[in-house]
Length: 436
Ligand SMILES: [Zn+2]
Image (cartoon, rainbow, N blue to C red; front, side, top):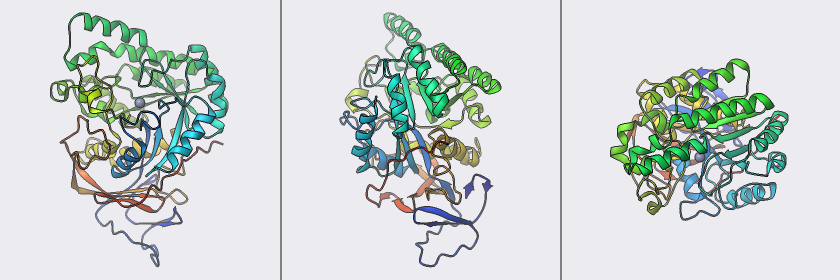
């Protein structure tokens, strides 16, 4: 069992949804017992970054299938991003979205608000209404949400400094991206491997340094999500050394896929920022080991097949990832590339802290919610369309085999997923951060 204090052998007793005790030989009288001998008992993953498309984008996917996918992948809490329709730009829309999704959730969920052009004044109300943070899309994205100005960012960051919540940014400089996209198009490139050239690492580097400066000036907290370029690490390191509140997230695809994979998977691996491979992959892996990058999340972003199966310039960016988040990271641990404690820190503990849900979520410890994933380290996860619960079946990992297999996912003591089947109803709840 992986706890915040290390790996131990023993039992977990969950009473009324919460962990009552951990240790050897706990009383099981009257309790449902799951024998996890020779298994890995991990906290449920906290996937801080998902786009489940509801409401408004149901042709891509929906919250029911998205949260079933999460449960089947050992995820017990998701942080749902705000670029649904309408975008979550004020308290009323946030509360309406929470109501709508509550009856459909198979795992617990927090909601991100959006920081867009002109709504900085609405941020405080969204936070006090229970948003886990706000997301700023600095470049074009699904739903075409206008980017906030630096002044909007600073105003929101001052609220962050006061109330302490993350402002998540998509860190690519829009003008640099725009310039190279047009240049590559004009050069007649149309192969999927053009993507990392059309969105060079310097676009991420520029956005990271701007984020560093804004966080430093304001004292607020910026969390750079889906980091794909090694160039971002200098800004994170300088911020860490100086006490500037700049943190980062990366995703399994940046740690696993490489440049030559474009010829195999094509637009299935088209994502923003692009997968770059090589030195980026190696340096990002070092950064998650050292903790310089604190979180690994999926950026789960399903699309309809006809939106993905287009020429590279028109194909949608992103793919369904929440179900492969934990399996792909556990695979790295079972191959010896990361410690299993590293995986738990990156995928459960740190994201729970980012979302303001620690210690309720993200760790196996007394008092925490009984959110558990039980993994057979000798098993195997084969990614097939049948296994994949998202309605959108496109992922570069289709057909892959990961070491280890998730046997049970338990949410607040309720078994949601049992060896291949979703066995509960939609028992997930909207969860709000506790910030003191
Ligand atoms: Zn995203």
